Image 1: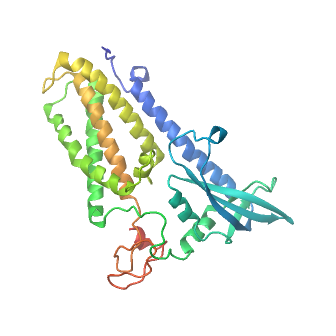
Image 2 (image 1 turned 180 degrees about the vertical axis):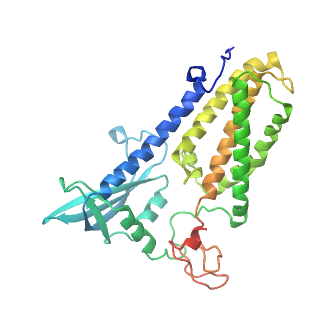
Image 3 (image 1 turned 90 degrees about the vertical axis):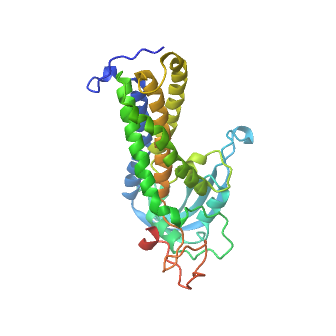
Amino acid sequence: MILLLPFRWTDPTTWPWVVWVWLAFLLVSAVKPMWRKIKTRLVNSWPSVTGKIESVDVNEPKGFLGLKTSSTPRYFAEITYSYGVDGNTYTGTNRREFGDQDEAWDFLRDLKGKAVVVHYNSRKPGASSLSEPSLEVLLQTRPPMPPGSSRAATRTIPPWIRPFLWLFVCLSLLGLVLSLYVHINALTGKQMPSIFWGLHVGIFVVWFPAVFVGHKRVGNTHRKDVWKVVLKGAPDWMRYMTYTLAFYAAFGSLLFMAIAPEKGHGANAPADVWRGFSAMWMAFYFTAFAILYAAAIQPLGPRCVSGHPLSSGQSFCPQCGQPALPPNDPIRQT
């Protein structure tokens, strides 16, 4: 059995290894967004010129000797553009990764032949990047998809559940905080009042809505990267923390099974038992929190002026006949 050492937040040398793992994952998850922001600022400082989108295509990367090295589907939407600097013509490529081929094609729809702003390196004009704001304008101002011709299935949250999403987000966050409180006290060797066993019941209160919402976002698509879809829109660190807590909960469960028969349960359960259960609680509550939070911040799908939901590509509401809101209308994002 693993012995518990004295635990003090003011003394990092007494911190358990899991604290360092959490900090490491948070640091790693912050590196990519920070690098993306630094790169974006650098590119935006380059001079710009009007270019043209020459071609669009969707490619599925191949592995060694043309064989796939992963069973996870990945598709790259590629935009090839051209631009001129000092009488010379250059080309560049913009790539975005999608887990669904139809989603990639929908992203590229009606972009070929359009003018777009290109930033280029004044010292090396062949190095360039598309202006993201310029590309976003093209995506928002292109004509709507004709009814029935959308390639990608619309995976949106039913309107009736949206008013309750933030309630379940708060409940799952509360459960997470209480579970973390129990876990920290268990790491210090303290026993907890029996009222905290109510966190068992709380898991079901938030977990069923999280499963329902996750299924609605994924739809009927069978994918290996399901967590990327379920947590789409949430910060990357949430996905990494979900993996970390799941691993930690599995480790804690194995430890708990080894010591539980010897030490028992109930109100007089020792700190080791509280530590095993609280690790599981943290994993469930945080996963539910991440799923519900990602769904809560997801923009609404197409809607008419009166607020009725529309199918992808519909220009007028079949219920009231009002026109559809433009893609960049703030009311649509409410």
